[in-house]
Length: 371
Ligand SMILES: Cc1cc2nc3c(=O)[nH]c(=O)nc-3n(C[C@H](O)[C@H](O)[C@H](O)COP(=O)(O)OP(=O)(O)OC[C@H]3O[C@@H](n4cnc5c(N)ncnc54)[C@H](O)[C@@H]3O)c2cc1C
Image (cartoon, rainbow, N blue to C red; front, top):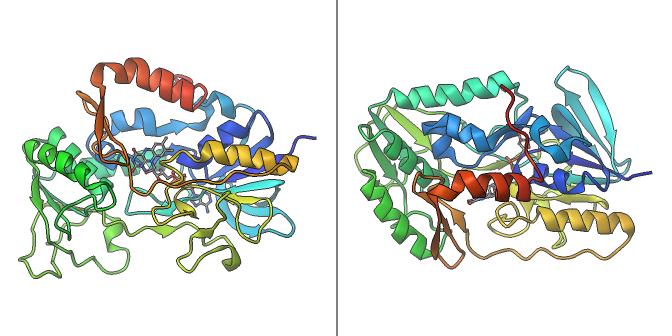
């Protein structure tokens, strides 16, 4: 009998892990979304949602390698590591136990209004994406608060899409992108200025109480650093207040911040047969397994675990790397961990990169959208 692998959370990393394992095991993917709804490329999602959806909002039925997997649209509500089951409340309201031989925890984190763990239908995801876009399209001035990649990506893409809108980027340090190599900010800053973004270092915002920064707000932004409040029609909060989606897990598998405690081989400490990957896995300070593509290593390790073979360790990168500004008509600028930028030319994005390297190479084949 083929082993059964349950993938808890089918976002960026859970989906890739499911794809690698689907030829070797009976894969069951459990997802609160009915499709891949990636948390990547916030700026494109807000400014050009149709372009974003082509690559980051993709129905599970379009992935050829998921054809043999069973996808359950529902919410994980419990784990019993002794019985080796997870409990799932399905979209139809029933509660089921799913047995596993190996379990992958890949439920990610909650971040702002764009990465939410709640159960949603396709129509609800589309409506939320459309509402945020419409709100910003109607604004004549927009504050973007935050100094990480999501904030910088947002400011740049809003500015290039709506050149007549005033875009202000506010962050607390001397420079943004503190987790990237210093060279990255030097290169990105000049592009932001060329796009008309007004850059304000040294501003630490008073974050709205409760979950106030989980929505686009209209109130003036106050600063703990003493400057006058910043008024704009809309404020996007991208301040990196991530919360792990681990409320469904027993406390003994979590660290003090609520992330999943893993060994270097991505196995969950004290829970044999359970693994974690992505933003929920406490591997290293940057929790970097997603962008470092540890999905391939994890799939190999799960197969090794099921066969009784030794597992390999994950080696994290010390700095963030990858794209910051996202896909642009002139191409995709990618930064290495040492801060060097290289450009993938614009002409090759839709002719080579997306169809051959991403859809075929990384995802093993993605069908065209019907209709
Ligand atoms: C190919 C690739 C390229 C990348 N490139 C870059 C880059 O250039 N630069 C960069 O900074 N980063 C990059 N990243 C990393 C990216 O920024 C994030 O780290 C990544 O999106 C996190 O993926 P995740 O699977 O951990 O979380 P998510 O994609 O958020 O997936 C978690 C999923 O679990 C669901 N979920 C949560 N709770 C439950 C529950 N109780 N029950 C059921 N479902 C639940 C969520 O709704 C979501 O669908 C890249 C990642 C990948 C895979």
